[in-house]
Length: 163
Length: 116
View 1 (cartoon, rainbow over the protein chains, first blue to last red):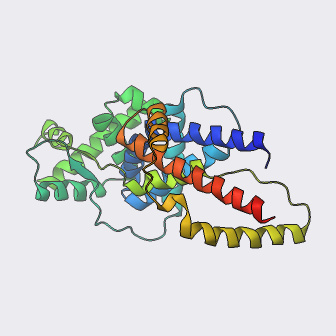
View 2: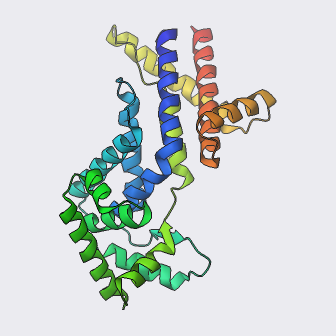
């Protein structure tokens, strides 16, 4: 490999690393909520950044949106190929306030696992990323009605499981 | 329990952060060379593979990637690259991991060229 090739690789590597540093954690949480499995979520993120590294085209204009769509595709593709039930031992959530209890966290994680991936996705986008239904619809390529219905069914199920 | 109670409960938690192993996997990707020279002859490819295995085994024993660096220049480089990546703790870990891998790769290439 020539010096110019090595320099281009280093530049591309640093660009990808910079995108990961800026968006990686948030993308991982998104993948985790769709897949409900930490290992699969890591694999989805790894797959997306590996593809970005080998893609010689210019950096996407809106990297956050581009990466979110790529992670979504990787996560649903992983679900389609999943053949065995996943380990339910990993807790999907971590406390965000001081008055949380381990039992409550476990119960909420179990309840979230009982939702369909599409329902967990909408809960994540609306509750944890603060998106409106319109924004969540744009991010997922679904209609606003579909997104709102998924959220409604998700809350109904969570309420039933938790009471 | 009403919808607002469920939402309030959800908001007291947030999705778990990634493990440090993910940072390391991405740093491994980003710090690794991705382009390869086209193969000229099968024997040349076989010789290169044998050389890479030999050098790789040697480098794995004394690679800088396995040793924490105390070089002030290295620390400055890490800080500078981490700042480029946004400056968060994850950016610092990523920058350090990438620079260690780059140093290891440079050393591997120097050793390979000296052994030719």
